[in-house]
Length: 292
Picture 1 (tube, rainbow, N blue to C red):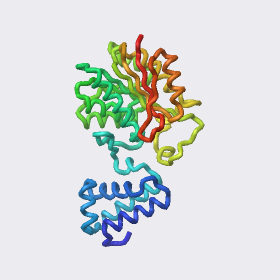
Picture 2 (picture 1 turned 45 degrees about the vertical axis):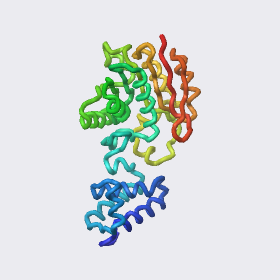
Picture 3 (picture 1 turned 180 degrees about the vertical axis):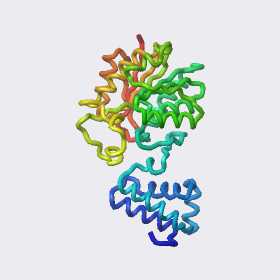
Picture 4 (picture 1 turned 90 degrees about the vertical axis):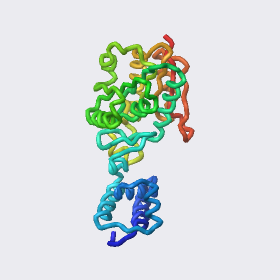
């Protein structure tokens, strides 16, 4: 990029580079990277674009570096170091699964269920919390809830711990996997009102289409066995042992996995299994109720 380039020209140049390599959201990514370089929000960025502001040499170099990383398909969230998720801005980076927009609707289902229960101190646990997105969103939006989160990956758990501290330690973060969840919960076993999970559900022999996912998301957060359902089977079984009577399980999964997930839940003793669409009308979540 030459000297004395306007902000608008720099953004347009970035958009062209992103278009050339097939970045899915070139305009949004270019704007977010420019805002990150300048340390401002989207509103102020829009004003500066209109006013014809120019960038300093240092700002141009930083933006060029960010654009090159994005052209190489490094996730935008890794470049900026943060990921917006519902009302939160989570810190994020290598070692943790980047939260997806569709998971925000899973959170909404949990929030709605908790509020509808009318309980004074509802109990929610997020199995495989990653960066802490689901657990922290629920805890921040339902302050009277008691929220636990389990994560086995030390790298992901470090991000979850950081984000939990950032938001005031509103979640009880447990270090472990599905097999140790009951031991970790101790006397809390059998008291959970909601068990929620966005587990790995891609079949082992499948390759994610997007380079951002294939190259940067941790494999442990993506692949779920030969049919992609191994971890979901574990979630269904573990959830049945830690849930309270009448409690809800809510699981995110692949768009073609709804029938299989409903059967898995039914076989594990869950009732009223139902699959729900995401905002693109793809089947994305299945819920069920425990009535032992």
